[in-house]
Image (cartoon, rainbow, N blue to C red; front, top):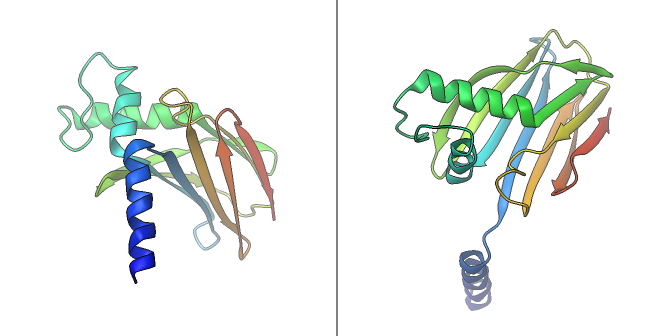
Length: 162
């Protein structure tokens, strides 16, 4: 008990003095709907500060002055920074929406008309314009299998085969 408390406190103290920058991208094949669903979790302040670089107005995800503008900013940014190819074909992610969950924001996209997912190529520099310590963790589920990979700055690409 004491040992785990000491470990937890050590990690907490290190986190305060050495923050980490990470996003999580879940990509799931939905066979029943013939879609691929993309969910991206980003720390809210990181996304706000990054979007702020490209905006002349204040970016506040929790209390947006213009919700439609915010959704357009989020969608445009993610689509610029995360490109996917499924079975060697470039695909376009369609923005579904976002929700705030504690200190992070979940952003949802969908790719329609995908009946098979044999190969997934990812090109991602998500939040690399915010922090050069950024890592993007990918969890991909297709054909009953799950695979994961971590992209650390400056690496931008990876592939999955099922």
